[in-house]
Picture (cartoon, rainbow, N blue to C red):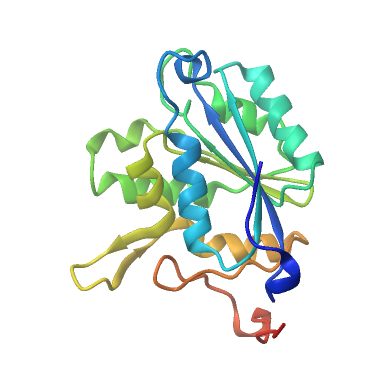
Length: 206
């Protein structure tokens, strides 16, 4: 678990985020996990909010994945991001484990992730990422590779840095607003969050 600066010094809402890397080989020590560092680094750069991370490295076991997601939601994680286990291989069961704990499915996230990844590799159609809501938490399955994680979260930009295709994270803060979570504020150079005008909160000062 890692903490960013004290919330007393930060005018933004504190948020607890669960990050879960799902891999038989990484969890058994066969190779170094790169998913958790990639998720933590991207979120730390993209959000103004002080973040407490709850990190888990677990094998591709459906019941264990579901139990971990429930644990993180119960621990107060407003957002839970997973990486790994979303392909068609026999051991890839992350989507099934995620759907098993869902109150609501949010299919647009998976659709947009595949659309973004198709700009890079034709095998993006083999990805089965899903997103769901459980209680007051949003759970999203992300790709397994750090590069693909950043691409799907940020979207596609042209050579001048202008946004061509929105990444999925642009919709995450407003979704969390709607389910009763903290007010997430993004750094525009990484990923500009979209909210309707009547949902935008005036800046707070310390």
